[in-house]
Length: 606
Image 1 (cartoon, rainbow, N blue to C red):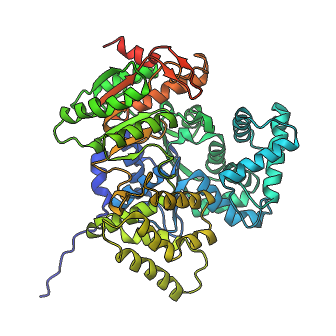
Image 2 (tube, rainbow, N blue to C red; image 1 turned 60 degrees about the horizontal axis):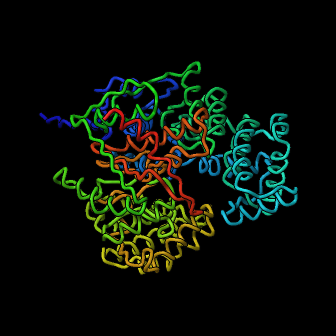
Image 3 (cartoon, helix red, strand yellow; image 1 turned 90 degrees about the vertical axis):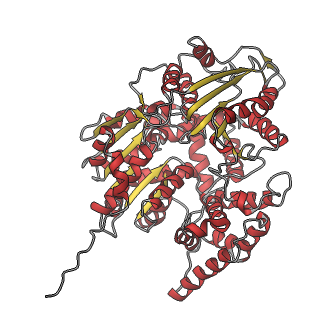
């Protein structure tokens, strides 16, 4: 009699992660939802884990190729984090999975494939203007209309353009005739020279979705599910795109966000849009109240700063601590004592704690320059800091960081995966002519990265190897955005400058996010989505936060509260609030307004 061999049932890797998630009733409800769903997720509530596992479930249980899924995020950093988490649970990048920003989605999934067919009035081929030339076109457009080119004009121009999207509407024309004429003239000049800008991507994407039913159907056919992360930060154009795709085209949505963490009002973000979506018909609303990150004391103090009542609970045993540090000699002394006193104290407080567990959060580029110089003077390893010393993070530079991480030892453990690095490399070239050409192109990259696995290799030398195999030429000829090429050139320049990154080897370069032995220097705005054992917030003076220009009755003041709240809730165990009671502007004016009122509110309860 023949024996029947038993085979173990295949279980996708993501299902192991799901078991923990299902213990939380809110996460379980959202994960199992079979309809349009909006998740209101407080700080540290595990929303990124929920989002990635939801994507995994849809891909395994609901979607059959060539259909796929689109996941829209606020920034390149958010996209990168989601891709990494998906990779860890066995979900690799494929053509039917889009994970990226709203700009990238509109450009590559709507405008490039459909604009020419639809006869939509955009340049062909599409070229994205860089920041320097954008300023030139704006100045020219304003000058032709006799409008003064000021910071206030540019700010209002951007807000108006993203708020009143339909240029044929009476609302667009009549609300501000001066700015509406400027917008029309600017776009005319820009398009005549064959360019579009970042706002063009989203605004044109929306108008195409609105005007052409076949475009909506084509997007639904390719992406029947739309996942959105940090919904509260994405503004009116995205909200209008969502309402068209969901309520007109029938795309199913899973949106995650937190109105309390909306801190990008200057880009057009409006926290009420998420609440509005959550309250719509045929939308399931789920709230996540359990905070897995912050101790109870940090949660309670953060809610005082927010000025709102929320029923958040801490899932941690450590209650957390707040420290107040007053250094009366100004921001320079603050930076010095952060390095000389606060950081050493924090390291002593918890055996095993490293520099990488600590973040210094600052308000602007002036504080960035001060703390960066002081950290360098004390000989501390760091990442982030003064952007004049580094480069702008883009998908290309982040990919190079991952390549460096692979070369510095990641190849031994498969982290990052070589297949993902190759996938990005292949996508930098859009003129592969044959299967043989494709294989040779892949092999060229694999040979280069394999032959450069010495962690001590100087960064500038290592980058030259990629330049020699045609990286820059490929990017120039591909559909990569201009700002990414600019950032790559910044990186190449910094790598040969001893005052910037000239001392870097590839091991250090590969640790540009999350190195255990490097202090994190981060702006308050950029800290959103991150978490650290210890958070040090510096420059907390009245007039700086909240900004002296903002009235207490305005929405902008509420955003200042939310910004402070975001900073506090990055911390797991310790928050250090640092202030002087006065500050000096870049025009050498001194203001003695005392510590930030948000600091004083917390001091009252200590």
